[in-house]
Image 1 (cartoon, rainbow, N blue to C red):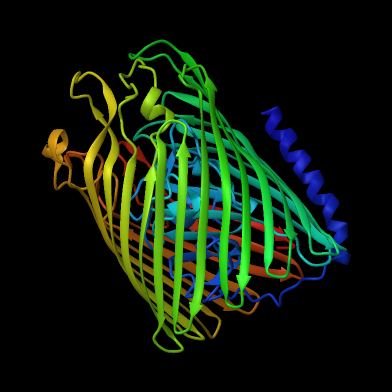
Image 2: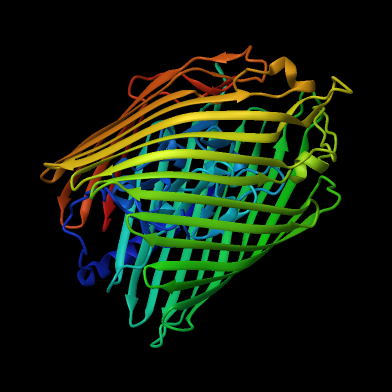
Amino acid sequence: MNTTRNAHRGLAAFGLALLPLAVQAQPESDGNDAVDLNPLVVTATLAPRTADESLSSVTLLDEATLRRQDPVSLTDLFRGQPGVDVTTNGSFGKTSSVYVRGTSSDQSVLMIDGIRLRSATSGGAAWQYLDPRMFERAEVVRGPRGSLYGADAVGGVVQLFTHDAEKGGPHPRVSVGGGSFDSRRLSAGLSGSEGGTRYSFAASRFDTDGAPVRRDGEDKGYDNTSGLVRLSHTFDGGAEVGVLALRARGSTEYDGGSMDFVQQVAGIHAELPVTEQWRSRLSLSESRDELENFSEASMWGPASTSIFDTRTRTVRWENALSYGVHEVIAGLEFEEDKVAGTSNYTPGSRENLAFFSQALLDMSPFSVQAALRFDDNEHFGEEVTGSMAIGLELDAHHTLRTSYGTAFRAPTFNDLYYPQDSWGYVGNPDVKAETSGTLEVGIRGQYEAYFWDLAAYQTDVDDLIDWGESPSDPSLTTPQNISEARIRGVELSAGAEFDKWTLQAALTWMDPENRGEGDSNENRGNDLRRRATQSLRFDVDRELGDWSLGGSWVVQNHRYDDAENDERLPGFGLLNLRAGWEFAPMWSARLTLDNVLDKEYETAGGYINAGRAAFLSVHFGG
């Protein structure tokens, strides 16, 4: 409790110290939170392209969207977006997974400002420990990106971007709020530029008594303290150097224990314009996922403490060469994963060396994007992935696209080497890497005040890794390869801006089917576990002078919690409402009401999510 108070006092002092700087701060916008309907995105091609030029199914959740929705968790932001599903073991810092096009969390890549964040043991990213207030926007690219990002980019790539430095300054921002479940949040930031130097600093603190994760259970609390430093300098000749560090630390309670966590990314980069047509960028980065788990005594065994500490260090050299309207990107990447803790993983590290290239060709009305990557993994040997996308401008407003891409996922340290525990879980050193191929056809309509995008795809995954009952010992749970899985889907998204109205809609239909033979034949034809096959999301916001009103409606059908499709989790509908009031220059208040209808719902068997929740906050400077 003293730690919590000290953290709040420290952040409050930081925030109050920034307020006098307001006299120097000049707002860069006119206060209009309009959504860019054809935004620039960089994740799809490693280069800035508008959404229609990217030849990808891509969703941008920009600063205006994050400001209006003011989510407590990133999963609230992603739930129901086109092709995206979310499962959680309760609310407020509880284990969460983000599924992109029916692929699991460890089959999609999460990046923060170009740095990959994941656990080398579990394979997935800890989405629940990242504070939305630390980020300015998010890009969701659906479809394989193995040729650009390597292993795990089977379903897609999600990239979070931290706040960039604003022109001039300094520009302070402070936010304080609280609400249901005795939740409290305080955040502060400062950004600006002077000469060629840009800077951005931020800190946040969130803590809550939490909500039960089991029916008739006790509240399970959560706290998170995050900090961000981002600095860069551009020299007269155009060369740039920069550093980034983001760290989140806290604790969360769960049914049967608690967990302390650290999530961190840090990196340094240098970029040099070698010639007018050639820019070269070198980056060194490290991501850390640390967990200390405290399990209470139970029928399964005595109280225990377990530690999992994974680190990924990456060196990436990227070169962009432009030839008129064409661009070629080529480079190499070296990555090392290290695992330490109370479990004895042997080996405890592995390395991967990769070479990649991409050609972006504009032959109007045709455009072509081709990429190829070669990976040499210390454990699995060599793997080649590639992709090809072709676009055709039908007219000034419509672009037809088709693409095919391959990807692979290497088994995690848990898949291979997890030592047998008291629950009967144990790794399988014979499990094979997953490989996949995805065919997609899409068309986008882009207009001044609205857009729509329709895409259909099929992903075939060979040797899908799934944990289940061991064929040789039914008392053990171990990873096995499903010989084949097929995921088909259709996604329709649309958005419009008119007369102070902002509308966004997403409709997803998906068929994630187990097509396995042999040992998994008994589940052939079943849905893959925990995937909703139908989803609808509708967001509407209206500006009314100094006021704004809005809401989000998310509807999802049933899903199955097991491979046998015996445990059916009912579908649900969620209604979230919000209101904002700019009551003075640079000052605003926001009220959010989540799960207004107080629905009790599950996305993972036995774990309930929080009911109706209200949150009120006051903001200065943004």
